[in-house]
Length: 68
Image (cartoon, rainbow, N blue to C red; front, top):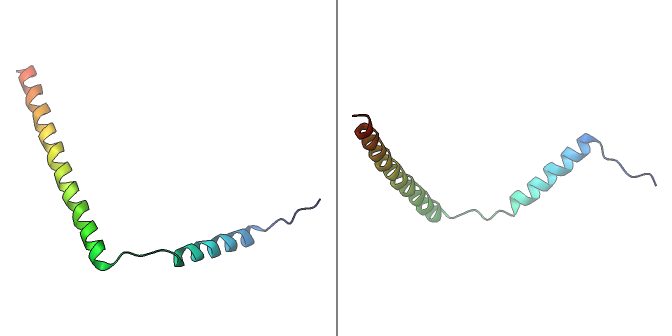
C-alpha cells in the first residue's frame, strides 16, 4: 500500500513541463486582431473615464448646493 511520493523538485519539474505543453497549444492572435482589440479597450476606458467624470461633477455640484 505504499504510494509513490514525488519529491518537491519532481513536482515542480512536472508542473513546469505541463505549463510548457499548454504554452505550445496557445493560439496567438494575429497582429491586426491584437491592434483592433487594443483600440476597443482604449476607447472603452476613455468612455468609462468620461462617465465617471460626469458623475463626479454632478455629485460635486449637488454637495455644493447642500452646503451653500
